Image (cartoon, rainbow, N blue to C red; front, side, top):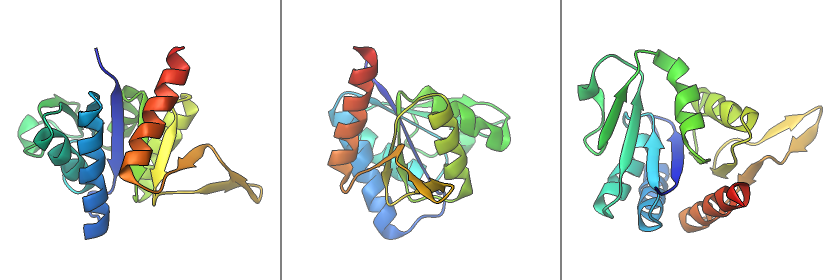
Length: 160
């Protein structure tokens, strides 16, 4: 079985962020990994579109009660009825997380992942500090390709 990479970000994203998300999804699929996301629009849909167009697999962890709410590129919809609490499931299903832009929902997913020891790669996403000291646990990447390579590398480190 291949790796699972959660791709997170806002449902309302800029055109540039959507382009990045689609490229990330494509790179994840080309690497033989599965995209995991929240299953709705914006970053989630763009990442799934990129993955599916590259022949990859996608899983959408849906907040509501109906699989029909999934974006058209989700191949495996998982209905939770959990609302925003599903963010924990999205974050923890991935063996690594790639955060693209995002708002507070994305920040919550980053927190769930880091609390579980799951590596987070950021592309124009959150940076955080504690007592005025930058927390470097969110690894910054400049390109979609670099982000996916970092995610795969971090997963391999954990599995060794």
